[in-house]
Image (tube, rainbow, N blue to C red):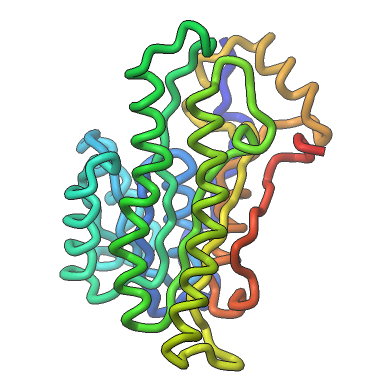
Length: 279
């Protein structure tokens, strides 16, 4: 087995910029892996963070402890437990964040799962479960958040899809379909948000507006890959033009760029962060 810890770049700690000062970000799957890196990157630009998680209370508590250590004590982070595949949980979490923070400026739909198996042997349950979390969960979170953003006239929604949604992959029919679906969802919500603002006369020449975009990571050095045999990882890396795995904070930096007010002219787009894997 291989140890990925030596390949992971530690993200910056503390506030280093003000691009997101005063903003509130809700990040699903936000207490570990890519989601935790996204939370930290948003916070480094001044945002307060609401991190969603599915069930690991110990990991969520550790995340809060580390966050408060690195970002000026308590008050800038909250955690919210829920299952994104349950629409009632999603609406509850959104309302919790509004109650505790007063607003949601940024939604990052990052929560996701895999249940890999060749298509001919994949159970209906495996198919439905992955689609429910990855694709339906993204919609269930986006719907109530978009309602709030439309009322205010501003907001950023960012989906974390995958290069697999663009290229497909053996043994991942359910995952590939769910991540590909997020691309269509992104473009549709982006068009609808712009349409609604235009209809109400709130599309301003230099306004922040509401944008919806997607980031598509390649293979990322997180704990999900820690049990992958070294030979398999070497084979994966040999297919990546830059010759290495992605670091979580490299995904996070693109997310905080898209979340900024200055990114108002970018919407309905797919941002690949995959080391050239899809070329």
